[in-house]
Structures are given as C-alpha cells and as structure tokens.
Amino acid sequence: MEMSPLQKARYAYQPKLPPVLRGPVAGLAIERGQAALPLAEGDRERLKALFSHSYGQGRVTLVRGKGEAAAKAGAKLSVGVILSGGPAPGGHNVIAGLFDGLKAGNPASVLLGFRGGPGGLVDDKAVEITAELVDRYRNTGGFDIIGSGRTKIETPEQFEKALETAKKRGLDAVVVIGGDDSNTNAALLAEFFAERKAGIAVIGVPKTIDGDLKNDDIETSFGFDTATKLYAELVGNIARDAASGRKYWHFVKLMGRSASHIGLEVALQTRPNIALVSEEIEAKKSSLGAIVDEICASVAARAAKGENFGVVLVPEGLIEFVPEMKALIGELNELLAAHDAEYKALSGVEAQKAFIAARLAAATAGLFKSLPAEIQAQLLWDRDPHGNVQVSRIETEKLLAAMVKTRLGEMGAAGSYKGKFDFQTHFLGYEGRCAFPSNFDADYCYSLGYTAFALIAAGLSGYLSSVKNTSAPADQWSSGGVPLVSMMNIERRHGSDKPVIKKALVELDGAPFKAFARVRGEWALSSDYRVPGPVQYFGPAELCDRPTETLLLEKGKV
Image (tube, rainbow, N blue to C red; front, side, top):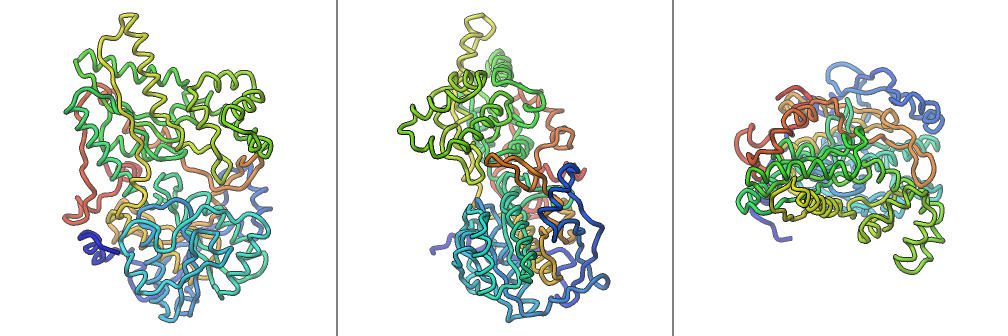
C-alpha cells in the first residue's frame, strides 16, 4: 500500500493510556460493584430468564495494589477479535491496544482476527494478527485490517458453528467491536458460551459514530469524536460558501440512524441557521408541515434582511421521528415482515406500492400516497438486517427542500414572503466513517482495547469495555467494565419482541441540547457561522486533544 505523508507520521504516534494500564500487567486487579440491573424495570424478569448466567453482574473497575487480582494476566491466551457493523475511526487502535495488552501479559499469547465480521467466526475465516500486521494499521482509519460485516449470529445453527470455531481455535475469549446491535449479539454469544460451559469469554467494545451507545459508564462511543469534527469542517466550509455566494440554502443531512447526536454536535461546532433534532420533533409531535413552517420562518426573516442564503442541518433518522411518518414506517415494517415472500414475488415498484397501499390503515395509506414517488420507493426498499427501513437511503433533505420551496411559493403569493429561494442538498455520512482517528479517538480506542484484554485477564465475560472521565486529559482516565445485560431492554424487531441494548437518544433536558436551545434563535437570523477547520493531529493539547462539545457540556467543562 502506498502511504501518504500523514499516514507515515501517524505511525509514530504513541496513544496515551489511563494510569491504571501503564504499569506491569501482573499488577492488574479489579474491584467489583453491586449488581447492575437493566433500567427498564418492566423488562427485568424477561431479561433474567433470557440471560440466566450473566444477569445481575456488577460493574468492575481496574485497580492496582488492591482488589481481586487478574489471575490470567500472565497466562498464554488465545483471543479472537471481530469488527462488526459500519466502520468508525479508531477501530484499528482497539485491535492494537488488545494486541499490546496480550503480548505484555505473555509474549506467546495469540490474537486471531475473524474476517468479515461475525460471519467470520461462524465460518471460521481467521487470520493471525501479528506484530508486523498490526503495526501497518496503528492510528489509521478504517476496518480493513480484517474487514467488517453485518451478519448477526442468531440462529441455533450459527451459535453452534461459532462455538465449534472457538473450540477448534482454542480461544479463551472473543472480543466484539461494534454498536448497540453488535454488542447485543455479544451478550447473546456470552450467554450461549456460558450455558454450554465452554469457558470462553465474550467482551464488547463500544463503537458507533452515531454516538447512541452511551450511558453513565460509557461516556461516548468511539469514532464519534473524529466523525463529528470532520463533518463540522465540511459544514463550516459549506456555511462559508453560502455566505460567499449568497444565493443558496444548503440542506445538509448528517449520519445518525436514530439519534441526533451527530447533528447536535455539528451544530454546536458550526452555528447553522437551522438544526433539526429528531427527539425534539417527536416530543413536540411536530408534523412535516410544522417542520417546513419552522424552516420557512427563518428563510423569510433572513430574506427580509437581504440574506437569501443559509444552512439547515437534517438528522438522518428524522423521518422516523415525525409522528405520522413514524406510524407509517412502523406499519410498513410489520407488513413487510408479515408478507415477505408474497411481497418479494411482485414484479416492479408500482405493483409493490399498490400491494402495500391496499393493506395500510386509511390514515397511513393517505400519507403514503401523498409522498413524492421517489420517497415512496425509498420507503419500500429492502430492510436492514434488523428489519428496519434504511433511513440513510431516504432523501429527507431533498424532501424538506422541495416542501420549503412549495411553501415559500404559497407565502409569496399571499404577500408574506419576498425573497429568492434556491437550494443545494448534501448527505454527509460515509465521508466520516474511515477518517484518520483524532488524537482523542486514537487514545480512547487504544485504551478500550487494552481494557478489553484486562477484563479477559480478570476472567470476566458478558462485559463492555469502559473508559471514563474522558472529558479530562488521558492521565486522569479510569478503566473498567459494565455488564452488557444491564444496558438492555425488550424491543419490537422483525415483528417480534427481542432483547437489545437500548439506544441512547438526545436528552432534551441534557446540557448539550439546552446549550443549543439557548442560542438557536440567534443563529436562525445570523450569518456568523463558525468554521472549525480540519482535524488537528500535531500541536498544543488544547488544539489537538479537545473532546467534543457534547462531552464537555455533559461534564460541565464549558
């Protein structure tokens, strides 16, 4: 592979570790907390029945000089690692931290990478991760060291084959690097191994640029820092272009399948005129028409100042939070799950539309028929592996821009709008998933990987690697683990109830949203955009190591 100058320079970067991980591996120990139970009390008995071996485990903290010694810290271990789901900046450093921890414990330990995600464990597609291999990927973006995949281990046959592979390879543990669904799979795999008394641990690592895998123990998912900084650079550039050309409204859709964390963070960094937050729209039960009116109010007010330009941020998952659209999508998911074979046998999109429209309730059928043809088709495309509509394929930014244009035409005819309106649309998503990790993500991911090793060394299974106090410098970070089952609830998936790790959505009473809400009225009229510029890797800590605005606000640091 031909390397860029930056790639060569990043190889030399040495990630920072929490103090507890810096000493000899032999001194690692854990302190156990009280039983950590799922937050949804109504789901606890069902989860206890499903996870009888791992339910009620306590949080653990890594310590030195006290506590329960990590008995396997110096043992020769064989560990398998899986990258699951979409890439996020820093994944390679998780593997590097895991590898370095294993080798620090015992140079004879072996790390195997299963190619192509969880399916690689099922089908036994493994490669040994050697020092030579891992050194080629340190501090770089992407998941290409072993590749990723979205296969779920869910059928009895898949679980049996995964166990067969793990036994054949002599594994002591499997580390799953993924988001909420991937780590739900990790919890199920840990329970299956425990049920079979296999003696094989399963540890998860919190990954997703969406930022929706977090709680009191998981302060942020890795990749969120890098991706939002990259998107903020691009939005800042777009805003500067808008102010320069003074003729376009830019509608920018930002990745984030369910939660609006990315959009909120990018807004805090760039100060757009409008930033929609899906969770607020759902709470207010705002219709599509109300959202359009909100945007039009800013467009008209700015036009009155002679400023016929602006920036609107649209979260990727917005359409599922608009009440009438949420009802439509939920009904579509149920219908497509119930009539899968019959639906797939139809020839052509028009036949599919007619098939669905005839089976929808009257209100949702009317809404479906009122949507532009291309949006109707996008709603009927193949579901994701979890049975949900692929919202990234629904061009919500184009739908809103077209509706705003129509509404402004009506306002103009009524004399309540005098201005010129033209628009550009953008979708910023895949651009951020494989970027060179920021210093924060490089450090955080390396620490998460090293912590995963420590949890294995302590004989734990069914845990998610946790690094805390991350709004402070790395020399003040702490490490530990949180039981995967404690983060779960029961949700409707593929037409049936299933245990899943609950997504962390934007909290409307949380510090980040409150900070945004205080100033968005000013931003709606202002052209004082903030241009963050590119991610910085070299220079003073305040420039290179600063966490996200979200994390700083949540921890009261700004």
